[in-house]
Image (tube, rainbow, N blue to C red; front, side, top):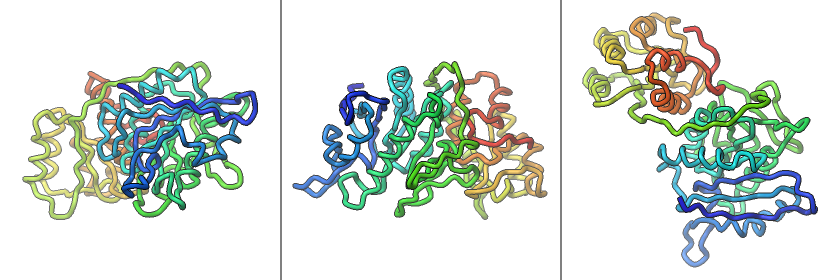
Length: 359
């Protein structure tokens, strides 16, 4: 890939205190209005100091690596995830932290996948974006970018404060694989109902140290590029038919299904439905039960309607989000050749994406 690289000297003093690599994949934050046409065009990051002059007060060395062509996040695919992980891996020893500028629509998917692909991560990788372009008068881009850079370089006793993949948006830092987009027109675009914020920014940045993954001394970063997208999300709804269910489970090559059920993991109890699930599991299709609710968790067997799911081999996703569940399934099915290991790891936290579950 022919990445575009821009190096910025933002230091007000002679001594650079830290360094950050910004990876621009696309999205609203990195767009500006073309004065001639009135349309949005990719922003020239060589001019970012003109848009955010206060960057010169941060005393950090910033390098921007841009994808050759900015991508709308609706077009993000597995190769883009590999590219993001590879850039971080290749530049890991050179920078104190990393900021990924990304469109909001699939940001939670990308942050989740990178939390699995980057094994042994002990530096900040912060995803951020904006609801308005950086050139807009009321843009949230400046605050999101400035604070992300500050968090990416924040240290305590010489160690990174947030050594994990996260999302910063609208004054709040969330664990990347615990977040989901919930707003398209307000600045508070992301929430994490089942896990507390890692930090909140006001006059100062207030870190929730108890929620942040601990720094692992001596951890060595490795990255994986194995993924299998022969998976699907199947959302239940009242009136769903046997033909729909059977058609989904009969997709050639299908290896995994994230089953979005009601409430705490409930589903129809009709024999045709339970039999279809049982047949799919026997064929080797992994089925992970997640809740359609933003908050709460799957507890298979809590109600009569979910007891049969556990009996036929459907796995409980506990409090995992759909975004973290489907990317985890794509990762594990490719990474693990042993079926039992895939099943075990689907219900086991790999990167803080879910709480320990016993059901």
